[in-house]
Image 1 (tube, rainbow, N blue to C red):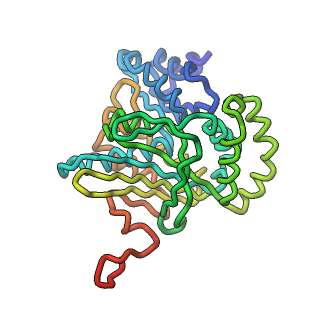
Image 2 (cartoon, one colour):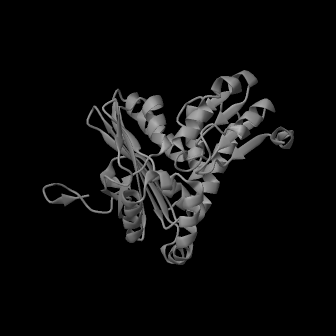
Image 3 (cartoon, helix red, strand yellow):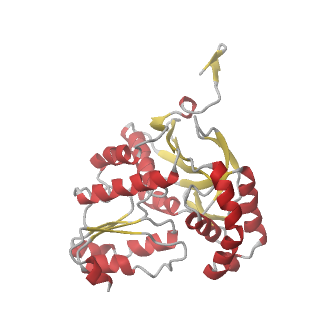
Length: 328
């Protein structure tokens, strides 16, 4: 049925749900068999690497495919790749890469982001420290991060996100982690409570999580109307030459931003900037290096704050004393 539906289609965009089993890549397989270009908006580590396992099949079929091609992961991966490339072009070497994300409420995504978040609370956080894989507790390791104008300082917490593993393996950065936070602040308390009190087996059960979501849905929708759906991504890179650089990306509506980001990836594929095979966004065969700038420009339409390759003090909201009473 899928193969028949894809006949004559130039590109298929697949939303891999939060409970999609890693072995289920039927849409990708159908795209390969019908020679249809493919991207997915996936935020599951296991699923993304299962998709990557079809690389040789897609390459043999001459089909370009990108997995995790949304906003985060997706645009955030491309931002990280560009930060790393800039540092290496100056003979530096990346040492630590950190992804920080903030979304007000559910970002207008409702059950999608909630069910994804609940599922992630049932997974150990995979991070990397000096080349070694480490496992950490979900929604632990709180940090206060300054997302700049319009968002300012927010608390963020560790989550198991796919860009951590792909950045470690593809970009070759030895220390990588990802953190996420939301608002109002008490939603973070609730997430910590779920992570600490509910068994992992419960959080991995689709039926039970859907029941949990339905029980809190009315409250979530009411608060979403007040919280809005502002989203911000900050990617920090620390380097061997002492240089610390960041990328920052802020938009007032996550629901709009996801559309721009996905469209940017789709256009990149259709314009021939992706080689045959299955790629992560940070791979140059997935999004050609010379096409990254245009992709970021397209994805950043309507942003209130978008900067790349800047020191953190240039975008943070609190002034820093640089000496002799001079503040920047």
